Amino acid sequence: MRLRRLDHCGHTAALCYQVARLLDEDPFVLLLLRGGAERALLAGLQARSTAAAPAATAPAPQEGVDALEAYLAGHVLPPLPAVPELPERPGVPPSLNTEVSPVGEVEPAALELLAARTAVRARALLAEALRGGTERRAPAGELTVGEDAVRLAADGPGGAGPPRPVSDRLAAGSGRDREQLELAVRAWRIGGRAALAVLEEEWTVEGEALARARAALDAAWAKDERPALRARGNRWTVAGSAGQLRLGRDGRWWPYRKERGRWVPAGGAARDPATALAAVGSDGRESPAEVRAAPVEACGQDRRSSDGTRSPGRRTAFRG
Image (cartoon, rainbow, N blue to C red):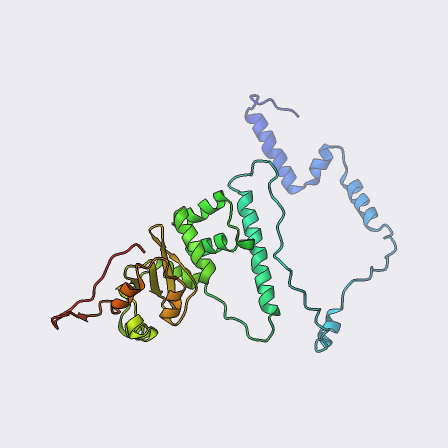
């Protein structure tokens, strides 16, 4: 029965309700409307269920080792594989430049950089494992976003930096400009996290740390060879010179040199301040005689004037 959309009345509604009631009581009524008999349907299903099943085939042999056998033989360990050789250089990832515009915010250059840095890190871990002995370095703490950005920009194969778009993104993501990122990369390549902290952190030396720093400075040079040092925070600048010493929180001294009006790392850290300052060289000094003439001044250390009175140690502001 076909009912037109607008040809509804009380009779057709009553007929629909009646058909629905009959289907609820006996669903086979629907088959009857389509010309199918209940008995014929049930007989067909019964015939299919009692048909002869095909002959069972032997199960295919399974690969591997039975779990029970593996458990019982757990004390018998196979020999370790041969130690791999250290590659001469880290692997180079394939180029992702397909001359097709990337989808969304995916940057092929950034992915290539991450793949290259992963290869460098994997080779470093393998070299550490092959170094011999059982001692392993303690895992370093998790890097901050700013530290990780500098690591990615610095750990390139052969010292190569990332492409300009990637370096700009790393700089912006770490809150630095391009020049600051280049300086941070220079520090990272010299001494990693410790060198980066000395570059970017200025802190006040107090208490025992100040006493140890003064003692180290006093013992580093002979009295007539001691340079004039002007202190600010953890930074000691050689008077009339392009050299500077920075004290790390671990008690090591880091040499810095002034280049184009900014202080840049000049070498690795040393426990002895004289050794660290030697890495700066004497290019920027006005004259050796002038440098030797002045006493050491450290972090507000008082000095005695010609009339015998005490006056506070000099402090000079500098770009750091």
